[in-house]
Image (cartoon, rainbow, N blue to C red; front, side, top):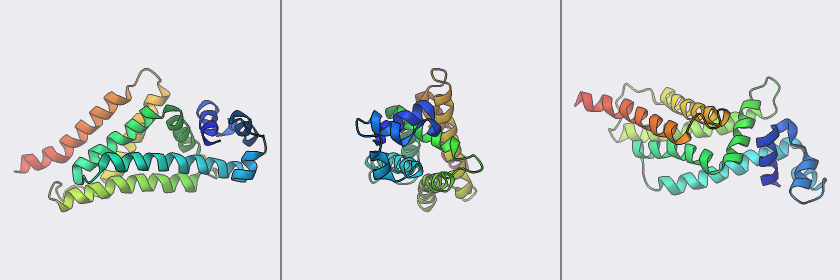
Length: 191
């Protein structure tokens, strides 16, 4: 049912994803999603939770025991790889992200919490880099984590909106290169 919901959200947004349609598209009864998720909000939250869990498992495998700037750059790449490798799911999650910004969205608290967890992931690697001497004191790690998340999210949204015009791989490579220069070039110039 989650897969059916992801596909429907990717194609039609949250508004075009009814519980009944999720049930029939998944090969079940129209009423099963209500019994399983309780409400449309429950379904949308399950979609977000499933997508985030999938991403976190992949991320943990990719990062392994790496820390600091190396882990930061792997995390950036993991966000782009997730969008490339699960395009309908990525489209659905970003669709929900954009829809959560409306004034009366019930998704806003849940999406805000998920976004903060992603930002804190970037922040933790920046803190590790600072603790290891890889990062100067002139970098505000809270603000920089927000900038990194915004750049990653913006690059992915642009590529999803622009279909063929924006390559996720090229944007990923450019962002990693840019952040590497900003974060390591400054330190190298000081030495």
